[in-house]
Amino acid sequence: MTLRAAMLSLLFALAPASVAAQPLGRLVETGEAPWPDGAIGQVVPVDGVRPATVGALRSQRALVSVHLGAGVDVELAREVLGWSEEALDALEFRHGFPAPLPDGNHGGDPTLDVYLTADGAPAETVVDALDATWIWDRASAFVRVRASLDRGALKRALVEAIARAVVLGVKADHPPAYVAAMGAAMGRMVTREAPDLAALRAFQAQPERAFFGGEHGDLEGRGASLFFDLLAARWDDENHKLVKGLLWAPVRRTPVGGVRLWDEPDVFDVARRMFRDEPEGIEGALMEFASARAVLGTAADAYDLAGVRDASLAVRPVRVVRYGEIPKWVTPTEMLEPTGCATVVIDLDDAPLQASMALWFHGSPWQRWMVRAMRIGRDGLAARELASPVIAPSGEWSLQMDVLDGYTRVVVVVLNLGDLGYEPDVPQSANGFFALNIGSGERAADAGRRAR
Image (cartoon, rainbow, N blue to C red; front, side):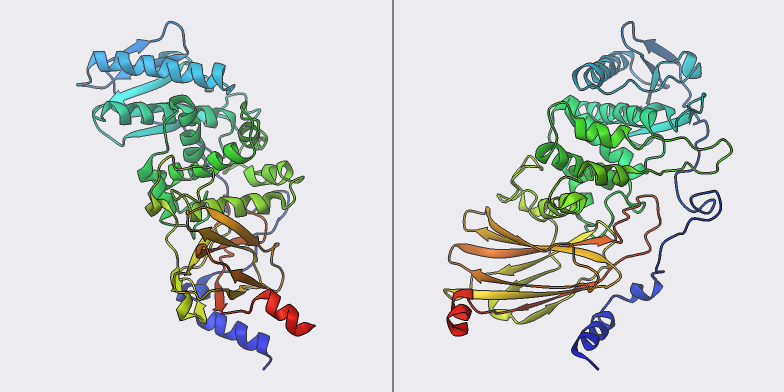
């Protein structure tokens, strides 16, 4: 058996038991439909059931009405109406987003209806129906918010829910996690608040998941707004052209009678074109996001995405290895979905002077991968980063680096790029497994002297 074959055999022997259950390959196009009926895409929405109410307040200047559930204070409803007007004004006139899609005579008139109820989830945005003209896959929606929330939480939930209505009015077939993420990001444009730390923690707790995947609940989806925050901080302009492009450009029309909305092109198809002039394309942007997640809340968080200094917000490493423990063979406990990531930290506190280190990465060969090694200085900043290109098709890559004085740790970030399809509506069927071999290398200068 060759060394490569032996390594791959060991790699899969160490993989989690779930690897055997992972079907390989992608759904293929069949007939006139781009995928088998019922396989992927969001279900064509039906009229949502609206809460019972005892009265309504209608805005005289904005396209919004607030409906009161039984027992809800009228003065609170007046305050909510004011917040709703401010949110719609800010989204449309300050940031350039469209108004929510009119809903015909639902709720008594075509305006956006906000239902203030005594119980239920903190907030939700419920689709009424697709655009009656069926020109595009757009949907009207109504908003329901629980009145018992404290004022700060109530305003945040309301603004995010209104932003989701805007998103659905532009494109109804985005996955729920995407709608939640975009709604949270747009909501913060209005409120100018820091991200919800509970949502960030929920999202960061599952780094192996595809960040717009169907496994995420609403809280994790809101935390995934971190992706749009990175785009805004790193690539977007003050008019949000990039974020707006990801919202508008994928819009299409599903033929009448379809069971599910056709989601091609999806957000990643558009992002691939938007980043085509970047040196590493969309893959480089995804790697930048994975790296930002790895150091979120620390001094190395160059974009200050969390808005606070709290190292517990960073992705929890698969393993922390002291330099004195190497050589070390590290494997993850979970397989990575496409766009999922993992980190391994090498603690350099016990590294000798002028030491060096080597990394050998081995990933599932049916995946594409990227790896980045971030050297963190004593000031907590990322002093220098060393990164791989897209690793394919072998799934193998290696790196040697000097461990210079002043570095306290190396954070190795592993990103699964899957088959580069990034289909957010496709059930994940290409999860990947990796192993990282960490060894003590030799200084490049010493190697060069011996070679001479």
